[in-house]
Length: 161
Image (tube, rainbow, N blue to C red; front, side):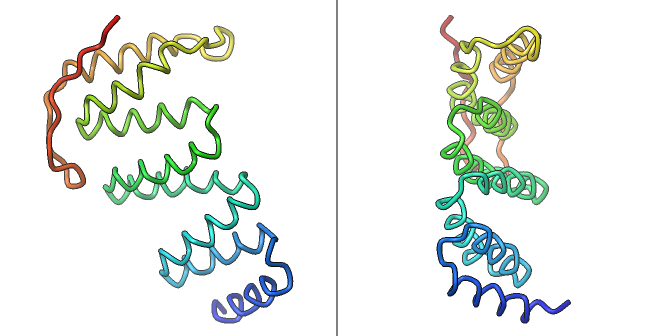
């Protein structure tokens, strides 16, 4: 309820500890409450630069963007997360699913194909390759449609097996 006071305290903390990722993250959170999107994202980027664990917030931002029907913005935030966690295949899968949903078929296939080639644990990820192949098949069989964030429909992609 005292956003201004909280912001002031965080700014003082930033002056005292400019390399503290948790302070940058706190500034991100409070500036979001002030609806200062660009400034908030800058603070988040600073927090991520100091400690990559804060990049997990990009996953939440992607979910929020999808709820607001802004798939391209969701993809942009997921790409930021992927920069920090390049070995996490589920971020790429999430991006591919969004691309498929907005009928950016060629881009979706380009994301799905490398995932299909990964070695997945049968114990932990049983059936994931079949699921990815099913997604590829669905993309190849779907008509291209327009959405609010994607104005040019893409043609069907062809998977080279």
